[in-house]
Image (cartoon, rainbow, N blue to C red; front, side, top):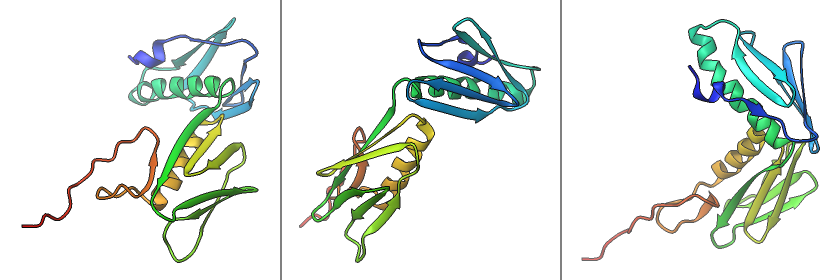
Length: 177
């Protein structure tokens, strides 16, 4: 039994859920998010309460039950309040700039790195802090992960790109005898 899947999800005001044709869509003040539903999972609504249930108790449906409940919870919270990730760029000469739908990064390479911003996401760069926000939690996390992978933080000086809540364990370096 899934502890997350058994919980009943309550809908906030101005939020609607529509289940049709093997997909679920959530409409709220910040937009509409849709996700295909797996055939072994069903979504039931009663008033402003939503519950996710497996159609038949199998190993696969038990595994997907809590996953789809989490997806639905994230979709509901995303259309009401956007998700946000902050990346901190540390190092001499490391710069970030947002132009139109592109992020221009100077990461110590011989060339500037250009990353396209997917639709539905808002990116701002002030000094050395890049803020990514959007209603889809997966897209926000994916873009943040992609940016971080361009220049991961190194343990000796801490140079590179890291999440704002990430702690980099520092190493001592060479010792002189």
